[in-house]
Image: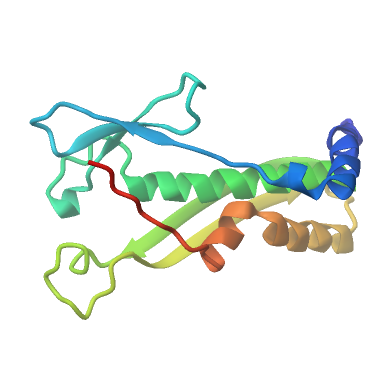
Length: 175
């Protein structure tokens, strides 16, 4: 295991961000594509324009859709799962913790009566999210190091922290 790969990749970036804090400000993007005019249940999203990956998007059966493609909620769960996974892997690499296995699963609970305007007392959005991390490290790893890994991974997971403290979101419609 090369314990220096993440540290080596980040070292020049850390120096740059100290000397030029504005360089640390980046923008992630995604955009959807207009699907068939007569299909309100399907679209596509490109999570990073220009990357060549386009995900089909469907509507959950609880909202009348076919649920034959990932829903926006599934994609949100995937974003949290992927972010927590990559954060754990990078921090384990920095700390020199050898991972034997790692699986991150996410579930989100919602009462769709809110979004369908059936009951105005029910909030629109997920009411709870559950992130289950199954982490196995090399047997002789110091337990205190594993605790440092867990704490640092929770602290540094961008999607997790964004969901916990959401930023203001502005919607601009152009017609």
